[in-house]
Image (cartoon, rainbow, N blue to C red; front, side, top):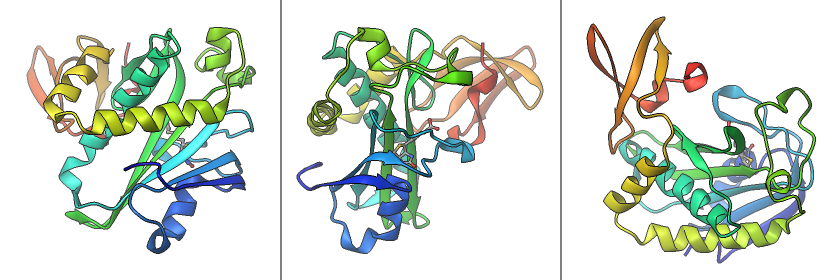
Amino acid sequence: MIGKNIKIFDELDSTNNFVKRNISNLKHGCVVVSKKQTEGRGRRDNIWMSKEGNLYFSIVLKESIYRSSIFKYIVYSSVTLIETLKEYKIEALIKYPNDCLIESKKVSGILIESSGSMSLEYLVIGIGININQVKFNELSSKATSLKMVLEKSLDVDEVLQRYLKKFNDISNLDYNDVFKMYLNYSIVLDKKIKYQDEEYIISDIEKDGTLLIKNSLGERRVAYSEISLKEFY
Ligand code: BTN
């Protein structure tokens, strides 16, 4: 079960870093939470601003996991987030592969890291959810928080507990069903993107995360790790 053992810190550099440093002492399913992070990290070497009032946590997975199935965990963790927000009557959507958006603004990001080649030693799912932050400065046109949407503060720990419960429920479902949910929540299908300086339409997402993109010259298959959808519109 995920979240039976939760370690809570007032401050860490990054919950993902903590997990990676201490992996030999952490059991499968353990969750590491920090009230703030001094070196919060996002995908593609971005900084994840991590002031107090939001939720920053990492889930440790040590069961047998193959590198080829990492996308499954992207699907399970992002669908879990959407379903958790539904409990607060918030409708959120997924921007491939795993950003969670409310009214086109990012409310949450997920950074999955692992060690090992084919068969992984561990997988860490690091999740940041903007909960009570209301000032995003230069990111204000791109970022939002649950407080901004609901116009009230939320208890950060309650959001975590709801997320973990949902994660356990959704992990018990068949991947095909969860993947269908993922596609339903996905906002990128039929949208235009630029890839290697060419314009394409995203025509499909496969179960392993491969993106199908096409233009008048034909169709291409692109692995999720190879593409950044910064330029999608
Ligand atoms: C992204 O959208 O770029 C991913 C952001 C992931 C942020 C979370 S916060 C908890 C965990 N610890 C980190 O340093 N990063 C992830």
